Amino acid sequence: MALTDTFVKQVKDTGKPAGAKYTDGGGMYLLVKASGKYWRWDYALAGKRKTLALGVYPDVPLAKARQKRDKARELLADGIDPSTAKREEKQAKAVAAGNTFEAIAEQWLKATRAKRAAITQDKVTTWLRKDVFPYIGKMPITTIGPRDVLAVVRKMESRGVFDSAKRIGQICGQVFRYAVAEGTAERDVTTDLRGAFQHAEKKHYAAITDPVKLGALLRSIDAYTGHPYCVAALKLSPLVFLRPGELRTAEWAEIDLEGAEWRIPGTKMKMKADHIVPLSTQALALLRSMHPATGHGKFVFPSLRTGERPMSENTINAALRGMGYAKEVHSAHGFRATARTIMDEVLGERVDLIEHQLAHAVKDANGRAYNRTAHLPARREMLQRWADYLDRLRLGADVIHFKAA
Image 1 (cartoon, rainbow, N blue to C red):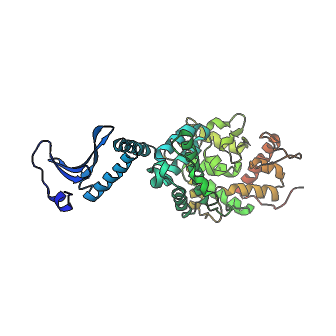
Image 2 (image 1 turned 180 degrees about the horizontal axis):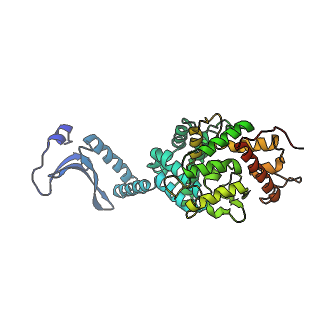
Image 3 (image 1 turned 45 degrees about the vertical axis):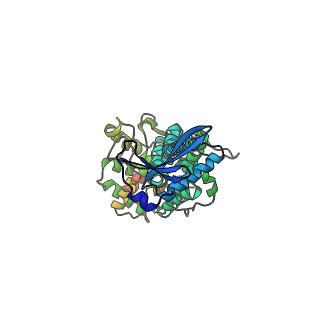
């Protein structure tokens, strides 16, 4: 006689050590013991009697137990041992649980770290742990679809960080391709998202390009009483007009104080080409003043909290804001536009030399890219003239607007 929900709910343990069995039909029964109520199904395969566990009541109610029995009977009819199928499914779930996106991504970070600069490794790791893992990190990588990745990207786009969001999408794609190569994923699902990421409008960094206002800014920097590392970085910024990321990650190993040169490896540069910055006497004096404080470590401008990392990307901009220069007036990146404009329009320096020193792509008459040492003596002289000019502005000397012949 078939069981009923009421009977299953009310039946009690009889006290027998082996428990009591209550049949439901088709080989399924309820085994009631002191420890609980268990669903079982007896079947025969190749002349051998076997038993399949269908679950525990009340987590598995009567109707669910019958569904499991019927599914097992279908497998058996197809010549598949239900017990073996259950074990393989359990193993597959365990493997999938171990192959989460987070686990695979951490493996990828470790396996590919030699291909990235340390600062890039830190940034990529932070992006993944902050913006990706909380949403899809615990999901088995084989269950993640294009929409899951797109949802992560959209969350970042909603904050207005479009470039970073697009980069995250690309990083997820690299993780998927790594998983495919390792045999833990079938395909890179991000290929379905081509063209789906938003693009940020090209932004122009605010910059002071009027010599009189630049003189006032230089005097504000000279009077700034912030942290010594920040003060030094601020003073060096207009002298070398590097990108903020290139300046703040400066390493002592890159700087030749005797030769008055700063050689930045291509891995740190936007154009991925090695770059040389001839150091003016003023820039050299600033770096020499920093050496006793940070020369024992890796970074010229270490983090204000720990010497293991470079200065934060927000430090210089925060200092400018503290001095009263709003982001619409001048930015850390703006020192490049300041130098580019005034050196050309006021001092009459050669545009190709300025472009070289800005680490822009410059080609010769034959269309070939110049190497990093091109026009180095002339660039050295130009940077010294620029540093001397900045000194005159800072001291309040009369500013004459002219363009040299």
